[in-house]
Length: 529
Image: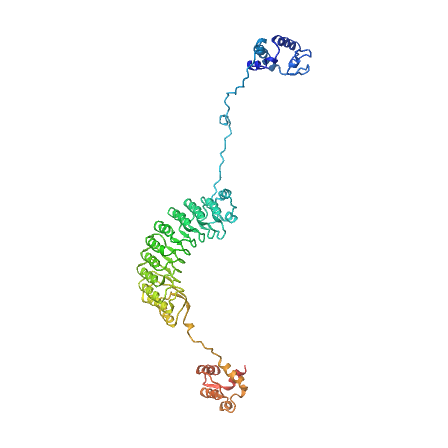
């Protein structure tokens, strides 16, 4: 064993002297028998020995022995200190750390190629959705996992809330399957709407969005409006029933004036009122991409209604507009009529249930004498009565270039005068269809038309007569035949009174061969049957 000088100094008090070491070495040489020398039992300083193999020789190869014995002896003699050196006090020293640089894995030489871990592309976003659910602490929606690969994804009335919506939105960022996204009635509120809006800034596949009845309010409207100013793929947006009021109108107005990609927008069942009319009316006039807009079930009345109508007059792109259930009144109807005189693109207008009376209907009808593009007009449930409907139809009749195909006057009762006019208009406009709540048949007096034979039977039963003796003691009974005049006179004589048309019907029944005579035997048979 080779001992360094430092190590020998540390253990010098416990090592034997040089003389003793030499004697021990000579004794070990004397007992060598070709293996590792073993220490004899009489070796001194046994308590200092590192161990013994009890006089046994441990064999080892000659090559190993020859290469290690001589250097070992030389190193021992050189490194073992003298007695004087061992008597000196050895100072405490901490071992120094090795300065040999450690090898890094990059320095290893190998023929093996390290493979990089590649993550497979997930077009549906399923893995991302599961991770997002853990992030937001929500339970994954199994319905979403099953249908997130569909092109049309409809998940209404699930009560998702904001957190679950965030998880869905995060997974939809990379989804390439869903084109129609419907999350109506899920209580998203403004926070959930913001998550959907952020997703739609990245997703370029969804073209139809339904977020109806989600209580988005002002905060949700802000987030969606900012998104719609950037998104270029959405074409149809439905935001019905989200508590949008006059404060939201400026944000909607900005979208209408700057977004040219959305072709259909539903803002029905909200709370736009007098303060929104001017703002939205001006935006509608400036819009250059919308083809269909639904503003029904709001509060556009008076000046607000007039402003919306003026906006329609200046618009040159809209094809369909729904203004039903707004309370336009007569002034609003008149303003809309003026707009339709100059608008040459609108094809369908719905102003049902807008408190339009006869006066408003007459003023509105004037536009129909000039308009050449309107195909469908709905004015159901307005208190304009039959006279208002008559004025509308009369204006259509006066316009030889009218394109009207359908009129809806549901729940409005019309009279015979309107029916007659409708019959006349059908000759020039055979494709015109009118939906009515009532017609002239309701005013006609209907009477029950009984069978003439039944009336005679009823008389016989009432007076306890026999059918065979009905004309006894009369000339017709003896001859068994009677003319029409005699038959009629004999019926009156016995008390059977019938209108002329019923008597004629009875005669036609009894004289089927048209010989001008009534066979009394046939009459008896008819009474007996």
